[in-house]
Image (tube, rainbow, N blue to C red; front, side, top):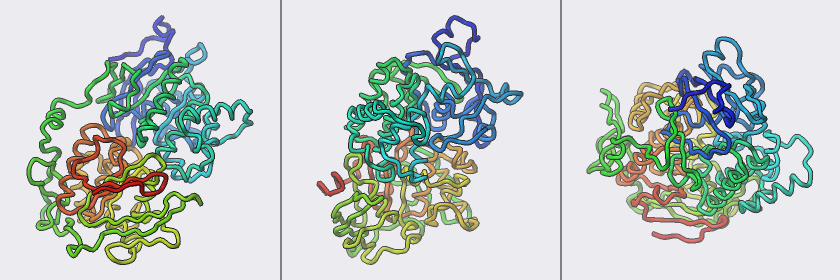
Length: 555
């Protein structure tokens, strides 16, 4: 376990960042308390820990985006840069600042407590940055995003020289991202935008590079290129911290980790298991996971135990629970039919001549490289995109229902949906919005809706956070809340766009085994993932896209 050393010790000569007894709280919840850490020049570290351990918060502290505080959200000062996840506060003085601890940077030969130094010399790549681009819909090109990294700002504000443009082009070529330089952010896939934001971070050759799950959503080729870019940054002498939930997301040249767990941090040699002995037993034996709450008297609950050795899951017994799905259309009427569908986003054609039929009870993997149109196709099925003139989309043998009715019948999980919740809602209210087919709540929930949401949060192991603000949750915990939201309506169609993004090992295992139980009760699933280990054997159909066109089908 690490402890801060006095400022005048010889060991501090090579100390780049020092955290001294730092306490952070969000939404009334303590993320960590009295956390001390020294980050040395030239270190290459993996930041590890379960969902909710505080990894993203620690990276934001190191970047200078947050300041130590007993209630970090309440202590923010000054205008926020819309690109960053929060404002860069000045050093807080007085009792609050002392009680919260301190953070000090030494980029220019002298240790300083001012965040402006970190904002100049450190760069962070995070899901929060992607969230802002997706939510704001900024029509900036990939080249403009990359160049904005020079000043660590949301947009280009200063004059760029020819050398700057050359540097951006060199980075894009090294990462195989040349075609993205002229593309606008709204037209990019999430994987493409993640790659551009990484190039943005590398643009200034930062002394400290902080990467929050940088490989999430990237295909195999993009992962390889990103790894090369990260290695190049490390070879140039910069300090590197990469957070990860998967072994394959730790670059091979990183051999030491920071394990953040239970409010404390310790240095560990890699590889290291993030599962407890109990969790390892679950992984090995595929036994039952998670609680099965007692049904509330007089309330129709979707909870039941699946047969055999499968996980306890919700919405599985059509006989016992009228809200649970049954196999639809026994006469063979398709659930969804697309015929010659084209889709345009920001006046750029993303999908070309898509003809595809999804029948009740089928389980589909939707595959393809970044930018092939997978997420756009899922958004079309969810009602967020529309077929261009000349194509048709039919739902259960008829025209597509109203947007509200459609979304009440289709469960959906994606990065974009997570970014769309820009409301001050509790985790419980987010789950309630699923069966209503809305983003946000527009009427007071009744007792049955609240009981249903609480049961689903119980099943997902989230009962402790049901009253917490959705914004205060870690990325992985928020993703699990969205999974509960998607399943709460017992939907006949479940659309999963990288659903395991940000989930720790135990949460992934729990969720993936639950899919088998859902499929066995008639839920039709379309699943997008770039990870082979996330492809459950239940999937017997696959649609592969290449450059917006259907390249192959099986099943």
